[in-house]
Image (cartoon, rainbow, N blue to C red; front, side):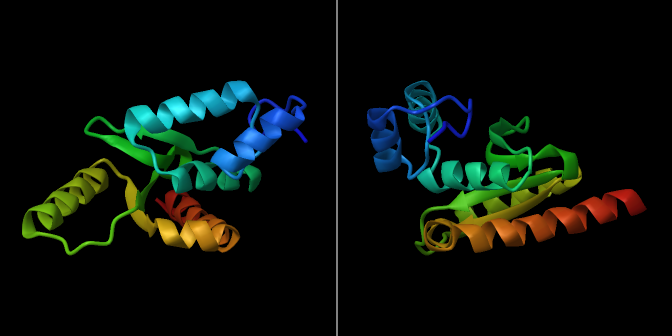
Length: 147
């Protein structure tokens, strides 16, 4: 058992604690870093899980990337992809809807594509979600080469 971030061997306690908190193999140092990041930014657990799923697939994502206006859950800068994790499913008010539309507009103006993924999808279908994002990344990579 090795830490997904630093590749150091994990003790039984480190492995147990990280698996209980994140469902991921992280050393105590990286477990503490992720806990701090989640508290500070309100990062959803599923964003952390997707981040490591994408890293395992060979992508170089950034967790809680600042785009100049707000913090993005996950960004893949090489193909200008922003990934937001939706954690709430209440009815949107018109103010919330217009704010989301404006945020998407700012992303497009800066050349970024933003996708929103329901947290429940990551929770139950992480590998399928990673596979679909890999397809999106490949499509964006092809389009960048064409331009």
